Amino acid sequence: MKIKLSIGVLFLFMSALYAQEDLLAEFDSVQPNTYKSAAFKGLKIVNFESTKMISKGELYFVVSHRFGSVETGFEDFFGLDQAVTRLNLLYGISDGINFGFSRSSFQKIYESSLKLRLIREKKGGFPFTVVSSNNILINTALDEQILPGLKFENRLGYTAQLLISKKFNKNFSLQLMPTFFHDNYVAVDEQNNSQYVLGFGGRHKLTKRFSFNFDYGYHMNRASNSPFKNPLSIGIDIETGGHVFQLHFTNAQPMNTNGFLGQGTGDWTSGDFFFGFNLSRVF
Image 1: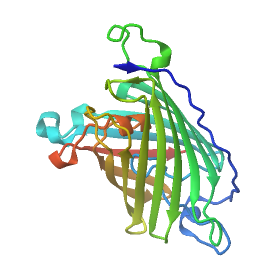
Image 2: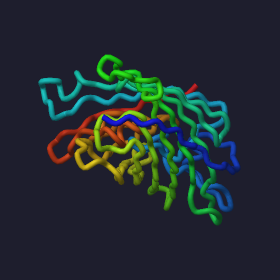
Image 3: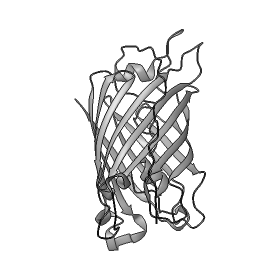
C-alpha cells in the first residue's frame, strides 16, 4: 500500500468563440468559413470524454450503467447481478464551459468536473477542436478499520485531460486524449500515485441515426505487478430526436476516469468484459 498526498494545478488558458446552434444543426451542417459541426454526437466516446459540449443554459441528467462481467454466464445472469451505476448532472455555464457533479456506486465515489473548450475546429482555420477536461473525486468507500490512519486527503483523486478531436468528413472523426491522473491512495504497492495515459478514440457514422464508436487508453507507467488492464471499449450511439442513447462493451467496469484508466480488470481475450449504457435527459 502506498499513500501519498498531492495537489495539482489542473486548469489551462481558455480562448473560444461560440455559435448559437441547436443540437442537430450543430452536428450535421458545415458552412464555409464557419466552425465545423461537432466531431462527436455524445458527451462521451465510450469511456473517455469527447469534445462535445453542452450549450449554455442546458441541464443534462445522465444515467450510466455498467453490468458485471458477461464471463459469469447464467450464475450472475451475464453480469446483471453485479451492476455499477453512475448518476451525473451536467450544466452549460456557457457554450464553452460545462460543470458537472456525479455519484457512482463504484467505491461510492463523488466527483465534480469542469470542461472547457479552448479552441474550435474551423473550416479554413484551426484544424482541431481542443477541450480541457478536469475532475476531482472523493472515494468514500475506503474504510478506516481496514486502513488505520486514513485521512480525508487519502480519499481524493484528480484528473486533467486534453481532448483533441478532428472531423475528417461528415462520417468519420478521431480524438487524442493525453491524460494525467493522480490518486492519493493506490491499492498496488509499486504503483505511482501519479499516472499517465495516452487515449485514442473515434467515431464512424453508419446511418443518420447510428454510429460505431471506440476508445482505448495506453497506460504509460503502470506497475509491473499491477493486475489491472488498459481499457478498450467499443459501442454504438443511437440518435433519437436530438438525444443520444449509448450502448457499449468494455473491459473496465468503473465509469469515473481514474477508475477505468487505473482499475480496469477485464480481459477481452478471455471473454471477461462488461456491457453498459448511457442514457441522458436534457432539461
